Image (cartoon, rainbow, N blue to C red):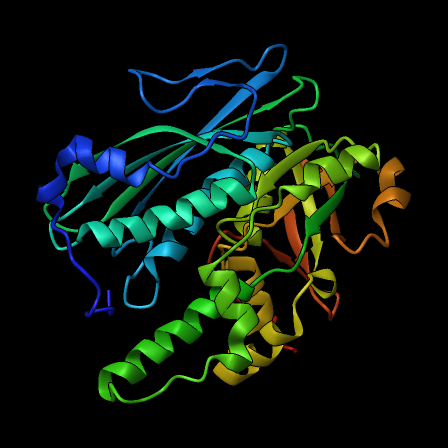
Length: 351
Ligand SMILES: [Mg+2]
């Protein structure tokens, strides 16, 4: 909230109902399945013969975001992405959202308008309807809770529990950039504290910062897999870091896994900023988080359909459960996989 010359309207001037009307006045509907959106006691959705998937996520100021470097419009956009990513991780199409916001009086109406501008931009870009929600006051920070709904044919929905031994382990996009973007922003925040006149040069880090501040959920993957006639056996989105997501798939599917360090897709910007920060890039890929890429398994017979596709990287394969979960290093060492604490093994920094 650095735009000090902009007009400020206190939340109390509008009241709760006035605020809802004000914030939702630009909400449009895109989905034919939305029979009734905002404006009644409840919204009405008709998903006909499709199964409905539902997910919810809450973002809390000081826990999940820091307004010192997170613009409110980006925050609104990201809050939607976090939820859509979970819908896409079910191999489903996202269709509707509800948005609930708790804000203290230190946020003027204009600040919430910015937040809502990010939410409606995300809804438009991803063809999702905002169909309801709530606004209330908070005694301290800002809280945003979003619920997303989606639909898919029941047999197409992909859960975490279907992976089989010998299935290929596949990831979309590249990993680790969002976490390193956060490290860059944290560093600039500390520089700014010492010298408020310092002009941060974020240009060399633009990809990393964008992955942190404006992530994009993988809406494209479900239809891409359908076009390739690939039905994944299990799937999850990468919100917490590659290793904990692999562990989720293994535990739910009762299988083991071998992840090959040399196969992990890293953007060159991640590799160079890891060198600058003197951090091991494999550690970042495994434990970083907030990439919002998808991790899934496919049967070996689909190898030819997946290999060579620029959206996908085969990073390993599943094994029998008793074989356990391992990282196979560039030096061909097998290290048991843990959700946290890669550095304690100390031997993955052969970058
Ligand atoms: Mg998830």
